[in-house]
Amino acid sequence: MTRTSLGDTASTAGRRPVRAAWLTLAMGGSAVANYAYSLLLTYGLAPADYAVFAAGNGVLLVLGTFGAVAVPWVLAREIVVQAAHPDRQRAAVNLAFWINVGAGAVLAGAVAAVTLTFGSPPTALVMAATTFLLAVGSTALGYLQGTQRVTLLGFVLLGEFAVKLGSGVVLVFVLGLGATASLLAGTLGAIVPFAACLTCLRAIGRPRRVRLSDGLWRAAGRIGSVQIVVALFTALDTVLVAALASTRAGAGPYQAAAALGRAPLFVSVAVSTAVFPALLAHRGDNRRRAEALWTLAVVSAVAMIAMASVPAAAVELVFPADFGALAGWLPIVTLGGAGIGMLNMLTTFIQTEDRIRAAQALLAAGFVLHTALLVAGAQYAGLSGLAWGGVIGVWCTVALLAALPTERAAVATLARRGASPRAALLLAALAAVLVVVDHPVAWLACALVAAVGACLVAFPELAARIRPAG
Image (cartoon, rainbow, N blue to C red; front, side, top):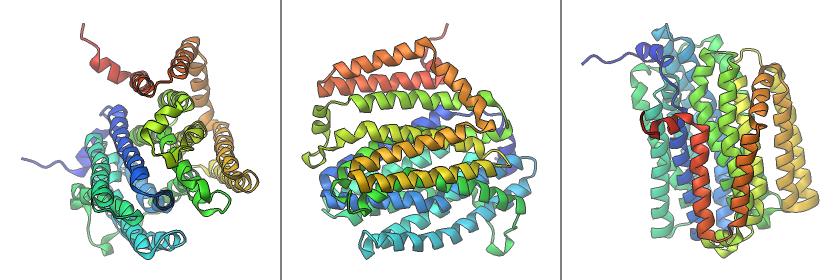
């Protein structure tokens, strides 16, 4: 049987439908596994240990982005752009792999140093190992994204979180180990994307054969600078809440709520990962951009309504008594999560452009404002001030980016579509049902139906597949 070359795979990628729905479901499954793991740990760890676990996840998200997010997107971009040049594609894969090896080693040391400010030396060692494995393994993720092998990419992501969940249950609940073991499960899960590098092994050569492309470096700088700031927006509040004296006492419940409130962000990351190659191939296509924003807006609206209406009895049914304060934070952190999801989607559009200095400046200014509001809010109003400061900072930054000429048309299309009477009535009816129903089991059932409905509206291709033929 003849093996398909990298060039053949990439050249046909642009003709394949972008299966955003499948990737979103796969990443949604990963998110559910992550939520389940975070939820289980509220029973297996004391609040102080849970704060170490949550802070560790936050550090991995921020510093790990340099090695585990930026380079794969650059690789995916190069594979799409160089579709007619298989040799350049292979050179890009080789370059990305060795950049990830070097960056992973450097970032592992940085993550270990930061971890020592809130955790033990064994915890720092575990975090360093996870960082390195994710950085190197991200080469495979970028390769699969660029060639639009979406199904395999989804299975890799699902596999990572499945291993993390299974090993975490054994380490924490069966063996009775603590916060370090809960983070070690992430290390074991990171072996899955690391092993996925076998999919692009033929394109990886010796370090001395790496070709340094000026265009590739420029793309890496553009994409990396944007994605690291988005990662900082995502995780800064969960790190600060455990580090600041004014908020440390209530860190555990807030961080557990933040994990749930990031649901819109998971959808945003899945959709942006799936549509990025297509957006590169059709730059300036506002219809594609508006469709991606609509998908995110539908899921975000349903998530915010659900989290704002969750009855206290449902929280008590799922979480231990030590995390009872979680219910009060859910509406706020979900509003912030929707803002970060929108920020991620807008910056995805920006990353397809070659000239983004204005966007980078606005994003940096927004992050400075966001950080200032988080710290000032914590200083003057404690945990509540930090939570609202984060929400205001994120949405102010979204407003700044939405005003850019490259973003304005897609955002305007979304606004017109969202302002339709039909959409408003459906959301109002959903809100009324979830607010009225206060029995925990009944509410969870209604929320599940709402989630399924949101997926069918956000992804019409799913509804078309389950609709009877004829």
